[in-house]
Each structure stands twice: as C-alpha cells, then as structure tokens.
Length: 138
Image 1 (cartoon, rainbow, N blue to C red):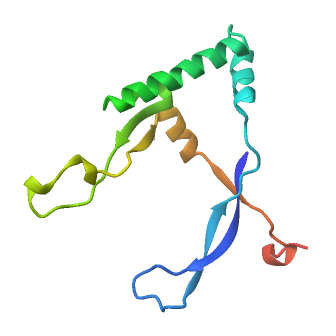
Image 2: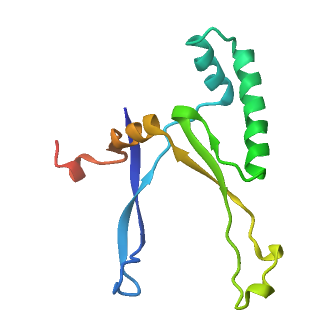
C-alpha cells in the first residue's frame, strides 16, 4: 500500500525567492478513513474481546489520558507512543510581570512509538491524477 498524494502550487517560501515565485508541493490525499466502530471491530477480530469490550476500554482510556495530561503527566502507551501537553505564552520583559493569563491554550502532542516510526520510514508514495503525458507512458 502507498500514501496517495497530489500536487498543489503555493508560494515559494525559500530565502531570496521572488515575491510572486511559486513552487509545486505534495499534499496527502486521504484514500478513506477508518471509523471508530471499524477500529473496534478490527481489534476485536484479532483478540478475545468483543467489539463492545474494546469500545468500553478505549472510551475509558480517553478519559484517563485527558485526566493525566491535565495533571502535567506524560502518558506512555507502549508501542503506540506517548502523549504529552505542551504550552506556549506571550513574553514579558520583567519576570515579575508574568502571570498565567499569558499562557496560550495547551496543545496535545503525540510522539509515535517504534512500531509507528518504522511504518513511517517504510511508507511508499503514489501520485494521483497523473496523465499518461506526464509520466511519458503510452
């Protein structure tokens, strides 16, 4: 399997580029999506759990992850990876002038585990919407 992509034209953001310069960039084109029910069914098929059991565990897992992220903890998910909360803020000149109202809405970051990192490095790509003229085939 391959990730399908198409090309879009956008502004050239490289240093020294002309104001109106444009380049072509790859954009992933989602082939489909997996619903939550499909995910639960797939997990259930390869385990001793029913789909309802999987749904119940994943529902509770979401609640536990949120609770621990709010407490400032990194949540480790084995081979899946880790979740953590990150923050940013506006800056102040004097340390004494800083207060928590300057902190922006936190972001949840996911750091993929080894198995997912391996999948990333082994991913192949397939361009969509290519005409025979562009590929040089007849």
